[in-house]
Amino acid sequence: MTSSAARTALDLTADLPVPALEDFYRDLHRHPELSLREHRTAALLAERLRKAGYETADGVGGTGVVGVLRNGDGPTVLLRADMDALPVTEETGLPYASETAGVMHACGHDLHVTWLTGAADALAAGRDTWSGTLVVLGQPAEETGEGAARMIADGLYERFPRPDVLLAQHAAPGPAGLYAHSPGLIMSAATDIDIVVHGLGGHGSRPEATVDPVVTAAYIVTRLQTVVSREIAARDSAVLTVGRIEAGTRHNIIPSEARIALNLRTQSEDVRERMIAAIRRIAAGECAAAGCPREPEVTVGSSFPVTVNDPDTDRRIAAVHGEVFGAGTILDPGPAMGSEDFSRLAEGGLPYSYWFVTSTPADVWNAAPGGDDLMHRLAAVPSNHSPLFAPDLSTVAPGVRTLASGALASLSVA
Image (tube, rainbow, N blue to C red):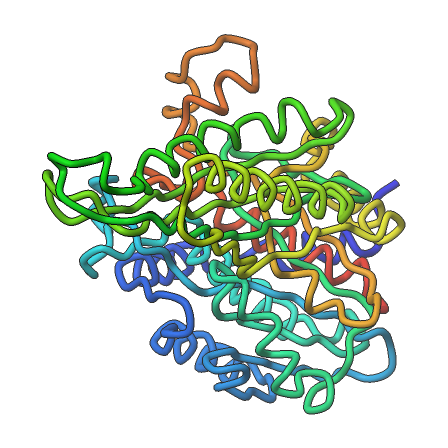
């Protein structure tokens, strides 16, 4: 038997203005904006919310947008979409490809904003079917991990209603039409670390008169590969990536320093701390072995928290999604190694549900090698942050329905 939330969601989204939503998406995709520069995107979202009847504020946490629709007694539900793009040069060849050099919506945040506006419009138009308070949030700077914290620091829950539940979703690779829920840990923590190796520079013809930081940095990079493979238990998931190594200015000059940039992905604080300790130890040991004149500088930089769904909330949202989209559309892939700052909006332990909407176009998915091996095929199609990432427009309407049905499963439905 279908729940009232599912029935109401299907009714409210039966006549979505899909062509207009697709045009809105294409416009956002053509005009990507980097973190904390989402002025145009925020203005478009704020305009849509005001027209739909939301009390709307912009400039929250920098470029954030908040819309509030008070509709009688009932729970307060927050729907969130992130707005920022990435410093990626688009290679999709789409007719609506980015018109901003070196910037692209390579993670699907333009689709997230489109889904949010569609759901906000549908729920506002159908406000006679539910009661409670709806908070619609356009968040800046998810890619840099700053946005959620900045909105909280700007008095998000002092200036606007504090939610009883938070909901968010993310476009992901995979055959369009699946909705991935995990009732618990769904995304990992991320930590950036910078290492500066201090050597003694000199002429490339006289290495014996120098302490070469490039060689030392190379040993550090090689040795770091053993942190996960030899110091982390097989039952614990972790990733260590060296994303950048920089040193020197010319072929025949041995530089005085080398810089290494790392990124860690972990699913527990204990593993994170052990990895950081190992990185410090390895860097110090290799520098000592090389005779570096100074100890290395190891700086722990920005980080993202783990994303852990409230089990009861996520099961409730997954159940209504199953009713709306049918049997076989809901899957539990387990936790991903990707990271998010959404959980920072759940300040004080507020319950939330965060899920994925698969969005690979059918022709791209069908052409991917791997046969029935899902993981093989996932590795073969463009993923988030790829210059080829291009979600299927067929996901516009379903992504609106996921948010609308999730909200109705949490509000009081007539």
